[in-house]
Image 1 (cartoon, rainbow, N blue to C red):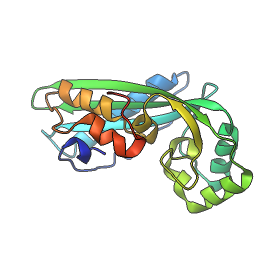
Image 2 (tube, helix red, strand yellow; image 1 turned 45 degrees about the vertical axis):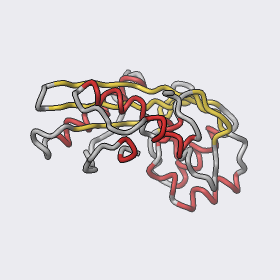
Image 3 (cartoon, helix red, strand yellow; image 1 turned 120 degrees about the horizontal axis):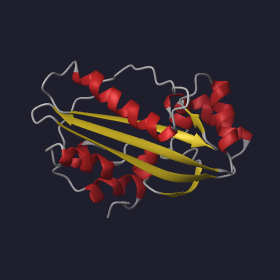
Length: 193
């Protein structure tokens, strides 16, 4: 997705503890993790611009992170079924050459369809839910869990391209690609255009 914006990049993992702090609101959690990921990676790439991102799913005020087991993935998908929830995707960019930092937060409302227990079992067996907040991928065409969204499709995927372009520009690294054109292959349209 970032390549579609014409940005040259290297992917690096921050390997952070993503546990929510006591009393920490979901929005603050997503923003903190995006910032901490960027700062952790920046230590390995001194002087290089860095972008961090984090996405969380919130159901009735409860943060649903990445499932730790197939049973937890199944429970998450059952709790989300035929209900609405929020997806928060935070991005944080820093440019050591200029000292600039910028952040943005994408909030989307997502309604899940009434998938069956059999569909859940097959999806969980595929392994796809195990590294996804809320145990699902909106872009998974086989499971297709989402009935509709209000917000940013790429944000629900975990990387809100319009917000990414904004923070990169804010730190002096404007993308050379078109955000709308980058989003369309995933969502069929762009929420930023």
